[in-house]
Structures are given as structure tokens and as C-alpha cells.
Amino acid sequence: MDRRKSLKTLLIGSIGATSLTLGAIGCKDDKESALVAKEAKGYGRIASEKLHDEKIIAEGQFFSDPDLALIATLCDLILPATPTAASATEAEVPAFIDFIVKDLPYQQVPIQGGLMWINGESNRRFNTIFDKCTKVQQTEILDDIAYASTPETEKYEAGRQFFNRFRGLVTSGYYSSKIGMKDIGYVGNRPNLWDGVPADVLAEHGFEYEAAMLPKYINHDTRDIQAEWDEKANLIS
Image (cartoon, rainbow, N blue to C red; front, side, top):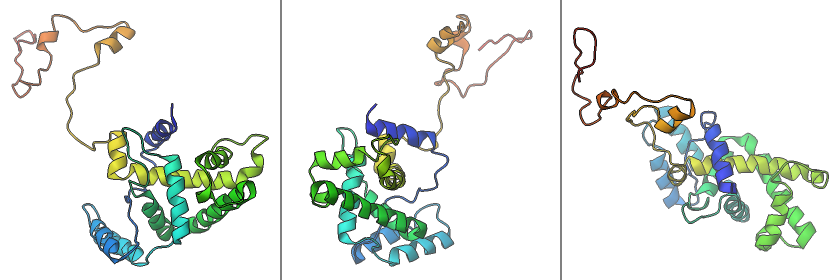
């Protein structure tokens, strides 16, 4: 299972637990501010929520341009583009993270501190900031903080705590965007058609439908027609 599939699986497993469904919105200039302010007035937002979002948007950009560039790099290392899915930056996840740290101020110090840690570790290893490292060098750093601690990597615990938090924001931002919902296959609440338990599942448990009854089960082309029964409660149609 590749990294994107792993993150998607984790997200599906916790889809009911997250409330980060704001979408990828942020504020870089007046034109963008007007756009996201308009989006913030979308369906399902009550008046107080709309006012709250507009207030957050009006605060302007929180991160510095270099920090946003680093955030974008990290986002695309976590969720890069694939032949079937767009990248995290294409889903505007950096703007989402900029919005979230304004909306949830307790996120600011951990994220800013983590970005400083990433650049500090990059300078220590390669004598340059993370964004100027090669892809191989960047991956080397992330491999030491992206997984469970080992005796060799336990010294990077501060980086690991940051990366766990940051990765959660990236997946929340991506999979609450239109691009991410398309990637995950989410179609929302919609009426469906029930065709019964699949035959192979029944067979696995030693069951099967009665052959005589199969023609009498629901036919979706005629499901609006009321069934008829004889006097002995046998199904006629």
C-alpha cells in the first residue's frame, strides 16, 4: 500500500471524528479574500459561522512567504500528484493550513516551531534550508520523523510530534476539498439500490438464494408496482 492509500485509509476510518471540513481557504490578497469570503457564505453555514469565517479571512495571511513555501513543499511530499489524483498544493492545502492556524491559535506555536525544526535539521545535515535540499535529502529527513520511533531516530521526537500534527492538517485539508473528495470517491448522501447480499458472500457462508424466488425479488425497473399475494400468503408478483 502506497503512502496516499495509507493516508486515505486512515482518513476513512476516522471520517466521523473530524470537524475540519472548512475546505481549502486562505487569504493572500484582496482578490483572493473576496473569493474565499464568497465561498464562506456557502450552503449550510449559519449567520454566526459566516461572520466568524469572514473575520478570520480578514486577518490576512498568517505565515510568512518563506514559511508558506516550506508548507507547500511538505504538503506535496505528503500527498504528491499521481496519475489519478491532484497534489495537496493543487487542492490549496497550504491556504487551508494558514486559515486553520488563525481559526485555532493553539496550532500556531507547534506548526511554526516545527517549521523551524525542519529548517534547523536541514541546515545541520546539509548546510541549507529544507526547500533548497534535493528530493532525496528532503525524504531522508522526513523518513526519520514520519514513522514510529526507533533507537536510531528517537532523538528526533520533536520533529516527529510536529510531523504527526502537520500530516493530520494536510489530510484534513486535502480530503475536505473537492479534489480530495473526488480522490476518495465520496459522493455524499444519495439514494441507492439494494440488490441483496452478493451471491459470492452468501456462498462463503454456505447460503444461497432460492432459485424459484429469484425472479420474484425486487426488479428495480418495476419496483413501483405493488406486490400481490394469494390467499395462502404466497407471493404472486
